[in-house]
Length: 246
Image (cartoon, rainbow, N blue to C red; front, top):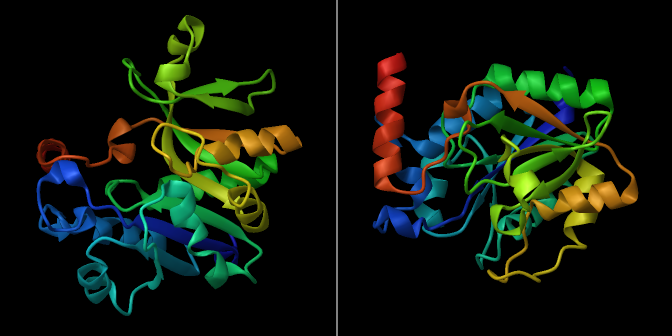
């Protein structure tokens, strides 16, 4: 893998209301280390030439903590994940490689997994490749719909899924690898026609499929790798599982 052709955007702007704390969510600690540290370290180990953290809520604290290790893009308004990624466009305008999009609250993804994702992405010639996982109980997650050749043709959210789609056990992790130029072109076409009035990153998949661009999915076997933190309870459970395994 060519080190110079991979950049990473880490989404670290959220407040994390369910954490019930004024501390930015990504600064909460797992095994003594802020969540965002785990993600930054993984991005660097995976071969990213550049790592950009998109910050917003409590950004002064996050930027001070990460100073000298990453670059920063600022999301002044919390207008969704698609909008957050778009905040890094000006910094990557001349970049022509692949962009890895990670969440700052998903700490246990492995660098080896990212390298495997990149390998599959380039082998299949995908415009976008997402990490997916097979869940015994996929309730609440977006389902991955695949075509006859194994390509991803849609992500269907729980609330929009019919019974056949709800029986699908492959889910979207929210981790993407996308060709830079196609990523930002698609983000500029997103709208806020949804209940949250936000720009959803997931919507780029439909944009690519409409254009006839190939979207792939890399299935990670271990669900803990894609487990995010949305509450203190989830953080404690993830930490217990991490300690048990290590």
